[in-house]
Length: 165
Image 1 (tube, rainbow, N blue to C red):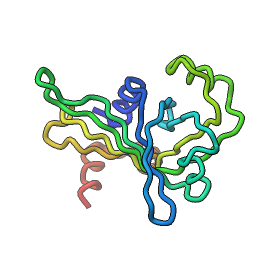
Image 2: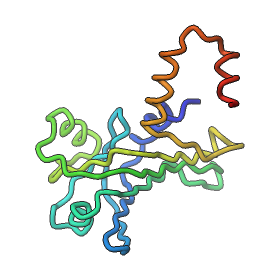
Image 3: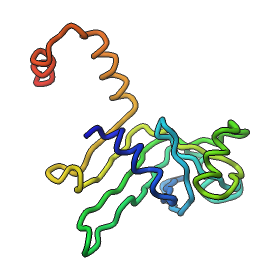
């Protein structure tokens, strides 16, 4: 199963993320409603006066955690998503983004912020029971797509052989 495909399936199922910021070595975490797009960016509305918003202006490197499924006696598996990336205030957002945000969360965003992921970790012991920690990054996907486009004529055996180098 493709990790990005699963992330695109899972992220719309949850509504709350925990955002972590840090300034001068002092960490801070808060809970926020979020919306995710097809590029796996996360969006949330916040006041510029909120502590996390103030900290993002000083240090845009953030982390976020989203619990998709917590294990229970009936369903004994965990699915969680962890983000590492850069956050920014996006100002006047695209009307389509605002509409999608409102449709998911039943609220209009004010002061819209975004995390552009540099790395996403999917912990999923339902779909990956033998290796539940799966990583995805936009750079890795872009590099693989570029490599495959340059080597279209290679056989799968050649491709696999190169992966073992």
